[in-house]
Amino acid sequence: MEFRGERLRALRESLGLSMTATEKLTGVKQSTISELENGIIKFPREATVDKLCRGLKIADKNFFYLENVHLPADVLPKDTPADVLKFIMSGENIPYIALGKKIKESGLTPADIEQLIQIFSRNKK
Image 1: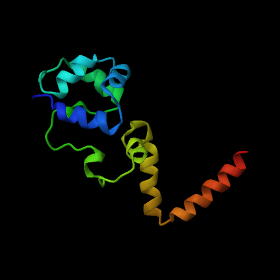
Image 2: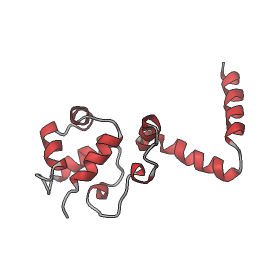
Image 3: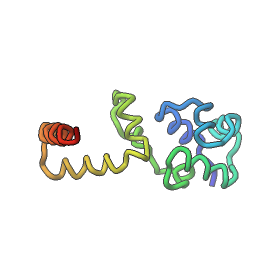
C-alpha cells in the first residue's frame, strides 16, 4: 500500500506544527516529510513511519495507509478553535476526552462539572 502523504500534512497542520517542528518531534528529516507529503516518497521505510507515529502519537500506522481513516479534525466543525483542536489531536489528552464522554453519559451538566472542579481545586490548596 502507498503512504498517504496528505494524511501526514493534515495531521501536522491540525497540530499546528511546521515541518521543522515535526522534524524535531519525530526525528524524520524535514526534506523527507516534504517528500512524503507531496507524494514523492510513496513507500517509506518502516522505521520512518514508526518515528512519525511515535512522535505524532499515532497508535496505528495504518492511519497513513488506509482510505477510510479520519482525523477528529475531519469531522469537527470548521470553526473549532485551534486550541480545542490541538487538545483533541494530542494523544496525551485521550483520557480526558474519554472522561468527558463518561461525564456526558452520566447526565452531569457542564455547570455541575465546573462546581466540582472549583471544590476540588480549593481542597488541593
